[in-house]
Image (cartoon, rainbow, N blue to C red):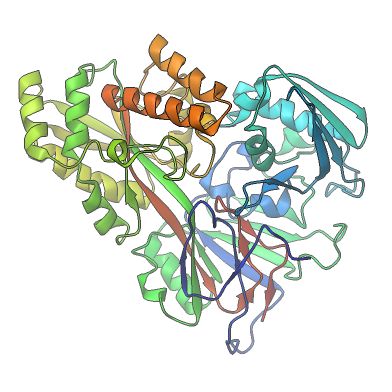
Length: 509
């Protein structure tokens, strides 16, 4: 029976939507290169791995983590229904307050120890700890109890009906409670997946190899996976073009132009990324709502899409997917580009000439976005300058809500339910770097979480969006797909709906 998680791709280029968010590089006519080493594959990625943050979403972990670790369930990209992975089946009580999950009994960690319900309980409880920095740990924190009646059964009691629990299950790796404390330096990164974590040289490379004890003996036909950390996009392009790397992960649309329509490669674009511009409402001039709104009108979103993402993206002021209940085009385009209006608003607010420090992570797309935003803000009378942080420091400061006066962020959580995004996205949750919170904001957020029907959810999301747009403490600039280039030497490589690479069924042609 085919895996509903995947579907075949026979086109050179795919831009996924919310209903098509997992892809597998399928069959196509191709003559493989001579003398190809079919025992290993090389993946070039821009960001370093962060084994310390296994339960938090980190861009450097997306290419490898779901080959080493597995989750309880995943979501079918077409039906949006949960599908079994480590859990085999489940039952929800009639009142929606108790969920019973049955587990596979043939799963072992890479140490050889059998996985039990105690490991699932430990993983969910660890994800709930604030210091873990899991963006969706708040879902686990809302549980009333997690019980383990047997080694193969987990019973979760909710404090309230929790429809977004499947987001938690899909994004929380089941970790080994005996070795988790030793993961930070990469010496013991232990999962249950078809590949085991072999070594990590920070800033340079990491290596995986096939786990011979995996329950599916036909999995992981490519024995070794080598990940090269290459921050320079030009070097990544060269590595893929020369065949030194078989996959270039997380490139920009502009970087992949030369691979388009070339039968030697497949371009895959997954659900993508949100790029917001946020401000600290406690620091001038952004303590004035008028100034915050003026910035919204000052930024040319379409220019960012055209110049940074080669036209592949959607300008929007909202954080929700266009397919989400309550998403409206009027709200999504509320802050259409109007520099004259922005300039007048800044003048009326007495903010002309204000110096603005914009913090950005050392990520190529964010740097390029800043250059356009800088020009836009200069044109309306502000004096912006950049402060660039390395990705690790940026992540730490973002979690702490300490990014300074203003910032261009990057959120890779497209596809989650709105109720999940409200507490998972650093821009929106309590303790956000904008330092924004109010009783009205909390009430509107709670209404979204409490909505039990699609109509109620749509009304709640629209009302919340209206309030957020008016306060303008953080505005999404665009949602952009995240393209990767895959050599036609490979087949069976798959990408999850949120951009994780899966090598379980990958082979060379």
